[in-house]
Image (cartoon, rainbow, N blue to C red; front, side, top):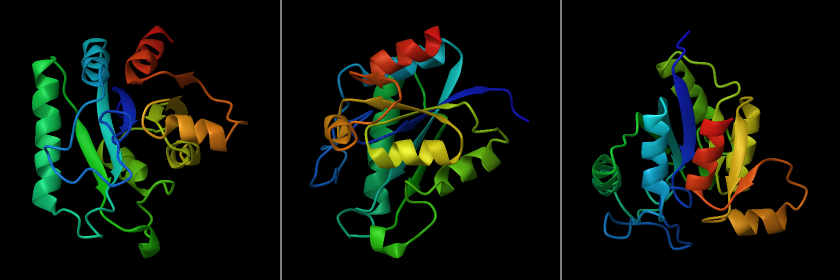
Amino acid sequence: MNHTRYVLLDRDGVINADSDDYIKSAEEWQPIPGSLEAIALLNQQGYKVAVFTNQSGLARGLFNLDTLNAMHTKMQRLLAEQGGTIEAIYYCPHAPKDRCTCRKPEPGLLLRFSEDFQTSLEDLYFVGDAWKDVEAALAVHAKPLLVKTGKGERTLADHPEVNIPIFEDLYAAARYIIEA
């Protein structure tokens, strides 16, 4: 079993600004202030980062795989400028109606990562902004953390009973992780 320390992140609303109209181009992909620095901080403290993102815009025809790859290339390039890197990016290309096993809250993407990297998901931190991120983390016994960016405030309003650590943004969550 792999003993590398990983932190798992949702993308839209955690790393980059989210939109109810979807992020459809590399131009629209804009990092949330402090998010790239947070990933670089995690890397500097010995953590590898993996990203898990639902991208139903592919199934809806709002953008294609080349555009998604361009968004991820931009994310990696801007992150490299901060001294950080993302180890792996897993995405679900399906629409909710497709009933796949990889669209969060289903744990398929996380299970694929666990298999690919030969690592247990138990007790890994998973940082998200939506309830489906929390549910996916809990399904694999990871530790969910919620950020208030993206859909975070709406998630808190819809789930006032939530009993997990909550942070203003990814940078605050990263500081918590490295101090834990």
